[in-house]
Length: 180
Image (cartoon, rainbow, N blue to C red; front, side):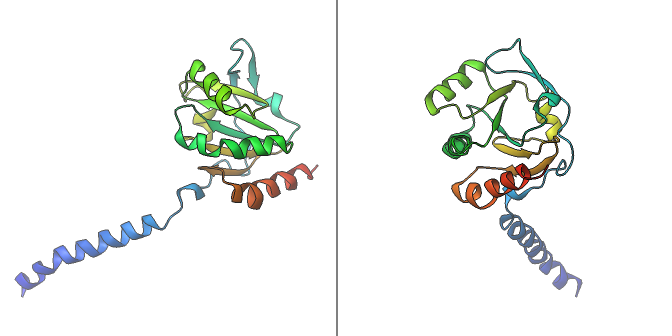
């Protein structure tokens, strides 16, 4: 009797592992909520990409609704979403870049090649200096919508697509722009 039961153990393990794998495949990795959703943008002090002597802080960003887009020239998905960021910037959506784990010369080449949609770019070459770590960024691209008071209102871990821009991001931007 016990021997017969032992024959079923591999089948039971296979079924359990299969259920976990199936569940994992059905999840959307971009749907991960930020721990900072509806909480203040963390304090930070970072240099600009194009002027390392100019330091920007959280308080300087308050007063305007904007997107904070985490990007790097090393990131293939950042190339994929760049046209949508350009489109939003051309529509008047303020976009602040956070150049993440990158090298200045490579970042400059990226922007020269694809166009620069960013109002300005914060530079965080090591990824642990201040902002990316505190935001919980684990890769690029990631995008955060920040309201006038500096509260994180939306987070996307993944590529910005035309459908996301039109169906989710722009409505969220307009919603928070109309909140005083």
